[in-house]
Amino acid sequence: MIQKLKKPVVFIPLILVLFSGVFAFQQKNDKLFALAKNIDIFATLVRELDSYYVDEIDPDQLVTIGINAMLEELDPYTEYIPEEESDDFRMLTTGEYAGVGALIGNRGEGNMVLMPYTGFPAQTAGLKIADYLLKIDSVDVVGKSTSEVSELLKGPANTPLKVRVLRDKDTLDFALVRKKISLKNVPFYGKLDEKTGYIKLGDFTTNASAEVRNALVSLKSQGAERLILDLRDNPGGLVSEAVEIVNLFIPKGKDVVKTLGKLQNVNYNYKTTKTPVDKDIPMVVLINERSASAAEIVAGALQDYDRAVLLGRKSFGKGLVQTTIPLTYNAQVKVTTAKYYIPSGRCIQAIDYAQTRENGEITSVPDSLRKAFKTANGRRVLDGAGIEPDDLVEEVSYAPISYTLVTGNHIFDFATRYFYKHKSISNPKTFTVTDQDYEEFKKFLEGKEYDYTTYIEKSVEDLEKYAEKEDYFDEIKAQLDAIKAKVNHSKEQDLENHKDEVKKILSEEIVSRYYFQEGMIEAGLDEDPAVDLAKSYLSDPAKISKTLTATVK
Image (cartoon, rainbow, N blue to C red; front, side, top):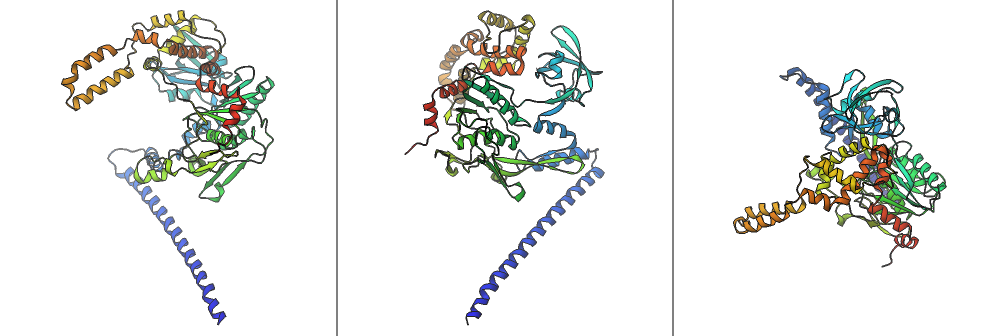
């Protein structure tokens, strides 16, 4: 009797297992059939369009548009990379390409050198910021797009080229040799005072960790006893480099980030594997809304281990991992394959793209659904919306006149003119535009167009529009006219009211002419609210200790 009762208990689960296996197999077959069917339909459609459409079509272009439209339904990071764009993609991921080492762009009158990178062919040959490009080898580039000019400057390493430029009123010729260009991940590092070191990390391409290590070792050898690591505006990059950078400050054997996806081969737990360079140096990490991906891994891991104080503004919130998969004909696709989770266990992805696909709207993780986690010291941190700093630094707000002077290229053009008139300036840390220089700048602006609307003028305009809609306009027209007369801005007065702000922007632009990217960064650190706050933390060990200690409630 007991044996008879046992048989169904064994038999029924066996049937369920077999049934579920058959069901899963059927589902997989149905999905494979659907994929094959739709791929066949797509291929047939393109073939018939090529045959019957009234005008000639470009199959490559049409298919690429179709692929990109399909991928847009997923997330912004899943991208199709055709063969002809593989070099650009390689430069983004490795920071390497062969060319002259200069940033070029169009300032309205043609393509010019915007920044020659230190130590590379353009800079060593003598090209300067604001040199207008006229000819590359035998090709006249006047009127060509920036991308076309960029392609002409690139080429195999160790190949020669000639460049003709217009500098001020002179036409100059330069002979260059293309070299392998490896863009710096650390464009600047140095000491801000006797004890405070500063490292600007701008990217996470190959060798990022080695550059940070070298900067850290150099600063320590110069006597730095505390450190600011600046990750502001860093878009991220290679996860492996982020792990190595965390390892510079965290002991061996610690979790840094886990990747979890649909397939087992994308699931991985990255740990520190080396002895750190310095696991005790007091640290502040600067972040903002443009710090993303690998930058968030570094900031988040250092926060989770209570290794550094984070200052600035909430980071971007990109907790997605991409894998590059080769396709036929040397094309590639960069696919989002996993999410990453930092040591506390939180994922910092801010937007739910799966939900976005369903309703067509961008869906951020609501505060009510954000989960709480704990740092090593028990501090409360939240998932789902980027890395939140330990102390907030408001974004610097510039006056409308400053924006207009920059976007109208007046700051840029005056800096170029200043460079032609002055052979040298003091170092980036001490240089500043004098009052006499500023008076020259005001004269330089005479007759130039730089109109703008102030915040108050915009508010009055809005009030006037709403009054007309609500039928109050006739009643308050006289008062509105009186207010408009009072707030109508004077450009000359604004140049005086915002003199210090405009002088600082001018100073940084002028410094770039003499000291390039490195000097511009160093000059920008003066009167930087985030840097000033970081220095105040680092000069007060008790404040750092209190910040990194959990509050008992």
